[in-house]
Image (tube, rainbow over all chains, first blue to last red):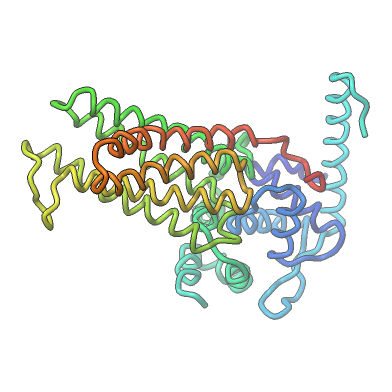
Length: 107
Length: 258
């Protein structure tokens, strides 16, 4: 059974953003930070990034690749892809529900 | 490795350092570190120590990215309000200034927390400006504390250290906080990290307070009145910026929409 991301507590949201960032290919820490900050307009601090990376790695959602210079890229595992897809579907369904209640059509 | 990065790394447990230390140091070296980053790393180190012991530190409901903005916003708004309250309290009852000064000091500390929380993006482009904006109020807070202590313990406002009285320390520390706020307003305005209107307001009221204080020695009473007005308006600049930051707390899952 896939561990739901909310179990990651404070790091659930950064973890989801990291998984989404890794969805289009491996990235190292700095590239993940830049991607998340560009995509959300919100800061991702280095301490939060690595706390979330450590939890994701422990749960097998991501895996570390051999380091390039001193940077180490991470990539999404099949388990991580399943978890992020499941989470995004839940969020999408929730967003649709909210929009319907507001009398607006999704998309 | 820069000494500050080595120092920050040492805060993490040895096991964590062995696994992530090298890449984490490389990440920290890739861009300028601001007060927000340092605070985030400190929290990360605490989390790493607690997480490794399986204690479970953070409550479930706390959200990640919005937290710094929200805490910073509330701290800035509360800090500004306390600054104003403390100042008004002390002025209203000159015979008993202790409590008013204490409220004022708490306000200065809250402004520091606010500045740290709201400085997440500014340091990326203006690291020196952002650090100066943090350091000046930090030093100012310490100097203000000395001033408050001296005023509370001495019945007469006579010079005690380096020809300066408790009141001199109090006002110098406060002016350092105002000067730091000008730098923070400039960094914020240039990076558009928060609404420019709030940054502009904070910059203007802080500059009015600082310039009119310096000018009052030369140009006399009417500038003193302007200084008092600027000194009272200064905290309102922080309150406005804090409220704007709280309002920026948009829906979290907006990747790709910004």
